[in-house]
Image 1 (cartoon, rainbow, N blue to C red):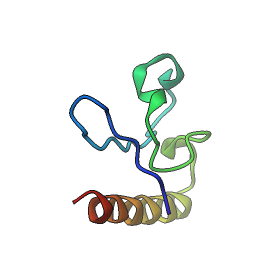
Image 2 (image 1 turned 135 degrees about the vertical axis):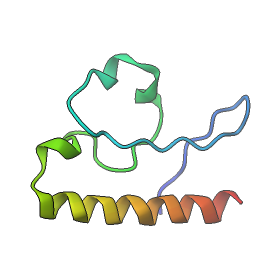
Image 3 (image 1 turned 60 degrees about the vertical axis):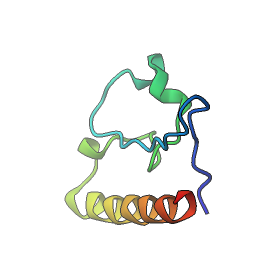
Image 4 (image 1 turned 180 degrees about the horizontal axis):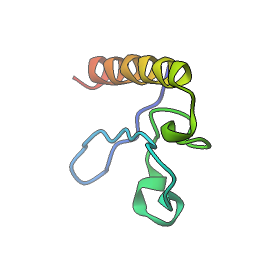
Length: 69
């Protein structure tokens, strides 16, 4: 099961999805759990691969919602 990362100050759950090539490594988002493997953005995947990743992301969001509510 994924371990959600929470901001200490306000306890918000942050899960992010890497959509297209960007410099996320140089921003604060790098400190939070990506909802999928950030080594490849969604825009670099084939359509059938994107569908699979999005399903996994949905499952992780559901799991996180159930464990933090």
